[in-house]
Amino acid sequence: MTWTELDWPALDRLREAFLTGSAATGPYWKSASDLASYDFTYGERIGWKWDHVLRELKLRGWSPSARTVLDWGCGSGVAARRVIEAFGPDQFDALQLWDHSPAACDYAAEAATRAFPKLAVSTVTPGFLASTEPIGLLLVSHVLNELSPESLAALRALVARAAAVLWVEPGTHAVSRSLGVLREEFRSQFTLIAPCTHQGPCPVLAPGRERDWCHHFAPPPPEIFANSDWVKFGQRAGIDLRSLPYAFLALDRAPAVAPPAGWSRVIGRPEHFKPYARLLNCDATGLAELTLPKRADSALFKLLDRTKEPLVYRWRREGDTILGLES
Image 1 (tube, rainbow, N blue to C red):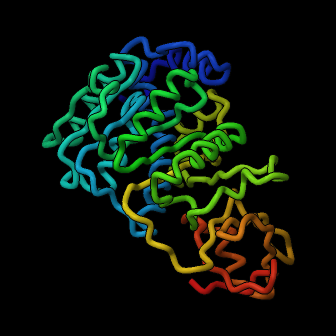
Image 2: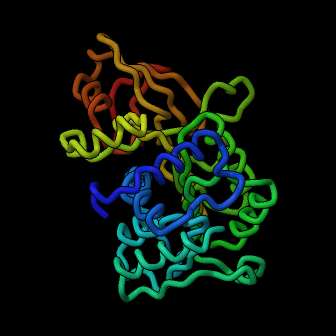
């Protein structure tokens, strides 16, 4: 696929379906051209979110132990390809795919086979989905706002069979809080790997926090802003290429290993003002709005404004004032 080969009518139709919610009414892939054009554009943007999630998991020292991956609701298969590439194709024996569209399964299988010729790639059957057979690493990507109650119940049943789960969604208020509710359901069964730095209840869902939501931002590759094709795509699609908000969960059956005390995850983006930066901090004690005076640590003040890395830190604090970093 190249920019000159894009199926713009298909992209326009897909964009309309995603924006209006009609994507939830049934399969929306009509051809391989739909999937190839999507994978090259919207799918690539989802891939950048997965890249940032995977960077954070590596930062935390996590990698999957399962050698089989199931990409549920695979679409073009971008999530599975990003995960397998990040951890190395030699770490996996098989990739299983499922989507309500056979065209999507075919496209994802062909793309994965081209990328990883030694990997056994297959589409799972309805019988497998309804069975109790164990699942290795379960991937779920950008599906939550499309699921009927019956489909969500089926997905919950798959999570209950999985050794580990990586789940990435859009970073909207509604979707993120829905994912947080699922986190509460799953946390008795799994170790919470990320984005949480603790195993307790989600502070975002505490009473009085209804306006908050757990979301983060992935950095797009800087070179796209000098690429006229990406700029034109963003203009036509009505997308801010700079903004890639996402929400995610990483779960593992392995017993919990308590992280060192005091680790935090910043929610959203820090806000910068001339004399100080302000951020919403999540840790084992709950949510807190923290302030970093510029004079306290000017290097950290600049880092929080410029870093493209996941915002996971252990602060030196006095109350709600950040003095610097321990790590």
